[in-house]
Length: 285
Image (cartoon, rainbow, N blue to C red):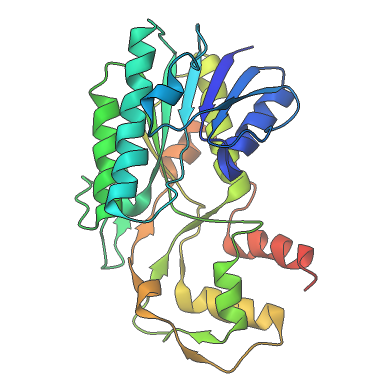
């Protein structure tokens, strides 16, 4: 069994902490609130943006550290504070306390890939982000790569799942996207986000070699038009069609999860139909 610190214990980090604790690992979950995370998990109340709240909070002799923060604000300053500087704070304390985890795992984003031409993207493609979100994520990744700690970066695509129903609401509201040209999108269910992180820890514990970077997305990229129309057909009672706001049209690429599949990960939800079917059924549709 391992000693594991989850920095950022919200939807994904908290779910990971609960799953790991149920399997018998010793788990600490860090979050800004004092609300307990779950049975068998030691909750640490601290804010990664404020170093003084972190001092004395990092357990010794950690085997794994997972950095799974969600910035409370969607701005360049917020991303710099929580993804870059927050990670730097944690890495500095690990060094100060002479902690040598087997792996530091950083939860990143596919926003580091700015592609808009529908092309396939895998981990061999050099990320050259143009928007602040991707730039700051890549900056945090670079800080980790230069830290000297063994590490893994996981770049998640669009996350959906319970409570993450923006696309369902768009479909109910009659959002429409032209069928041509294709607008490719990529997504991963919340449960698979947790599953991927747990899988990587288990692989490392078993002595299996890991790459430094994984794209985590379900194996089936789909067009935005296809998903919206499927959701509208599945829901049934929706508003008349209207155009999708331009903000929804950012990005147009097909992400490959081949590296993750080759490592042996099996997705719980192979495509959006499987994932959204469970969510819609739970919502009463």
